[in-house]
Amino acid sequence: MKQTSSSIFFLDGAFARTLEFKFFPRFRLPPLALLPSSISSAPSISSAASLSNSSVMSSVSISSAASPISVSVPSAFSISSTTFPDSVSSAISDSSSITVSFATSAISVPASLSALISSQLSVCSDTLSTNFSSKDYSDALSKSIMFFEGQRSGFLPQDQRIGWRANSGLSDGWMYNTDLTGGYYDAGDNVKFGFPMAFTTTMLAWSVIEFGDLMPPNELRNALVAIRWATDYLLKTVSQPNRIFVQVGDPSIDHSCWERPEDMDTARTVYAVDAPNPASDVAGETAAALAASSMAFRSVDPGYAETLLRNAVQVFQFADNFRGAYSDNSNIRDGVCPFYCDFSGYQDELLWGAAWLRRASRDNSYLSYIENNSKTLGADDNINEFGWDNKHAGLNVLVSKEVLEGNIYSLQSYKASADSFMCTLIPDSSSSHIEYTPGGLIYKPGGSNLQHATTISFLLVVYAKYLDRTSQTVNCGNQVIGPVSLRIQAKKQVDYILGDNPMGLSYIVGYSNNFPQRIHHRGSSLPSVKDHPEFIACKEGSIYFNSTNPNPNVLIGAIVGGPGEDDAYGDDRADFRKSEPTTYINAPLVGVAAYFAANPNPS
Image 1 (cartoon, rainbow, N blue to C red):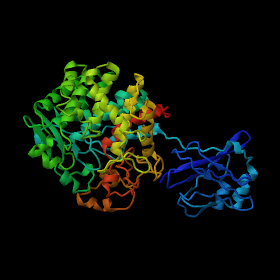
Image 2: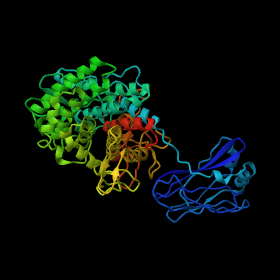
Image 3: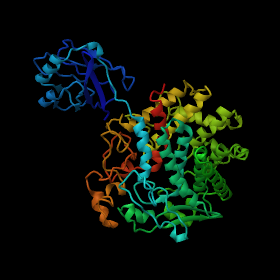
Image 4: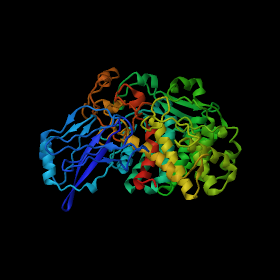
């Protein structure tokens, strides 16, 4: 349920004191305010900071100081009885603020507290206001980057900040007599899936490309470190001619164990695709990741940037020369499906890889590629999806930059599709057809729903940036949408994730004081090797999986799968669709958080 704060300011000489009350309305109505009993009237107030367009007014009724203060609540609210303890009165000081959480029809404040407030404070009713706690986007940025250190595989560096992790997967690649150490575990398991890892890398790099200049220097450095941990691994996956390594670890065996990555004794099966067998999807996404990352590193490490771009060109040739989905290969299918099959086709990754190579290299051959192949590879399908499997919406936004800023009108169809996608996200638009939860979260069925909220929010702020720089808008039929409207939509999604939701819960682990405690993550839920150096075997971890206790190791910055279509979240380790974090949920938020940390007011 939505947690809202109402604050009443009492002026006393040169300082102001705040008495704060939090409540959990079932519906999105303006907050209540509670006045001390020295105000004799019973005013009705309407919050200027209301979360919706509702004009419903919150009724506040005040009784005399001789009896408890009561607040009448509209029938839309669900209530149970809560009272202030008398001990609260002794806690009031010049700087204190009292927070009471409730879901009740009446709040009773003992007369002793009322009298204390009345006698000590000179009440100025003109100072009455509603105070919504602001979001700490800088903290969200820092934590969303730190998360990646908890997902690291391989030899961990001395400056590793998530200290409960240790070295793991040190023999990865031995089956092929090659070094495949490093990279990231995709989620709460111990498998390195190449397809989502490459997409994660692309999104981290895109975040730095668009918003790195807004990041504090230390966080920009941390973001680049996170990218390089991935790109160093991806370079290994394409180091052999006409071969791409697409995965390390047998997911079926891995998922049958609840085991720390440091203890892994399951098969570290290596999955490789050799020409002429196809892997256009993984190779295309890897090309995109390396090309985008070359741009992120160009100013700080030009030699490394050149290595990334050179390899991006080579792996794209593999993708384009041997067309087809990697999961169609018989030796790959059982290992990657149903986890990261190519469900939507490989064509979008070819266009996506070419688009990133065009932006990174400015080579006109890639411009011709995305011009000439738009119809044959389905760019005109106008699919309103963006994620590890489907790149269409992101592709259209990326290529639109060439139209908006470069006036390359041969790519106009991409911009038209990007405009159309933006219109689907505006609730009042005649083109709107994106589903939202009652609490306002973008919702798509299938689990791990916050991946849609973070990727779409990212596209919203990026497209707003492109429109802003060219002073353009989007025509959505019944209305014209500008950059501010797009940013407002993105901010609503981010604020939901940070706690402005019906559960009053931050879906970023470690952000605020109320966040998921039982995430579906092996390393987080098992004792660390530092606290429990003894080996924990495959099935011995089951007692920790089945435990109702909070995870012993806090995976700072992890964004869980998130609530269902009813905004409900049960904090259940077994419910992986809601409680499991993934790298590709986090990566887009890095860019979005960087933008709002620097620009908290979308207007």
